[in-house]
Length: 371
Ligand SMILES: [Zn+2]
Image (cartoon, rainbow, N blue to C red; front, side):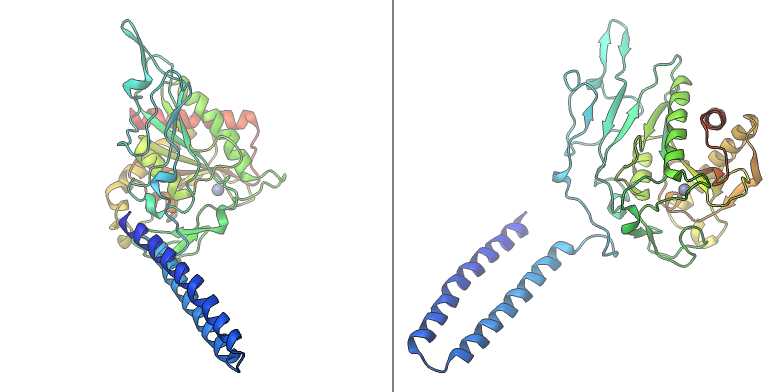
C-alpha cells in the first residue's frame, strides 16, 4: 500500500511541475519573440519523452507478478466479490479476506438447525481465491462456481467436481504455463510437445452434426450432477451455462480446494466414434518427478481406472485400453484425484439417452473410487 501511495504522490508532483514549467517556458519564449521557438519545441519534446519514460517505468511496476509469463494477470483480492449463498437472508457471507473453507460440509453459518436435524442449503456460490496454491498461474478466473449439497440419505460426505470442458468466451486469447515449474510439455495434444505455454482454455471441437463440444459437455455435466446428488455426493459445478470465465488452471484450483476429486468431461476430435477413454499421466520421469504430479499421479490413475470400469459396467464402448497418456494442464496442477474423461468423439451420439448412460457409468466409477 505504501508503494502505491508513493507512486501516486510522484505522479501528482510530476503533473504539478509540468503545469508550472511548460506554460512558463512557452510564455517566456513568446514574450521574448526571439528565434528561441526551436529551443522551446526541443525542450518540450524532451519533457514529453521524459514523461513517457516515467509512465513506462510506472507501468512496469504494476506488471511485475509471480509468474514469468507476461500474459498472466493476477487479480487483486480486493476486486473480488464475497462468497455468497443461495439465500442471503439465511446465511452469513464470507469475504475473501477470511480464511477460505471449502469443506464438503457447509459452514455452521449456512446450516439451520431444527432440533436434531440440520437442513442443508441447496447450494453455495464459491469465489476464486487468489491465495490458493497455483491460483497465480491462472489467467481467467472472474466467474464463481456452485457447490450443490446432496439431500439424499445417506450422504457420502464427498464432493465431486464436475467440469464441463471448454465454454470460456475468448479463452483461447490468453495463455498459461503448461507446468507450474515452467518446463515444456512432454507429450502432444491440443498443445504440441515442447511448448511451455498453452491456451488458457481452448474452444473445443465441433461434432460432425455441427454441435459445439462445449454444448455437449454441458448437457452431460448437468446429467452427471443430478445423478451424483441423487447418489449422495455433493457436486462442485464448474460451468452451468455457455460461458464460464474460468480457465483450465482456475477450474483445477477450484477442484483442488473445494472437492475430493475432479472429473473434466470432453469429446475427442476424432471422427470414428472410437469410444470412451481417460487421459493418463505420461510415464516420463521428469514429468512424474514434478510437483504436484509427483504426489498425485497415482491417485489420478486410480480415479481414471475406476471411471473406466464404471463406463464398462454401464455398457459404454471403451476405446482400446481406455487410457491415452497426455500431458494436460489439468493434471499438471491437480492436488486431488483428477481425470480428463473423453466420453466419445465428434461422431458419437450425444443425445440425452446416451449421455444418461455415460452419466450412470460415471456415478458407478465414483462409487467404486470412494468405495
Ligand atoms: Zn475437449
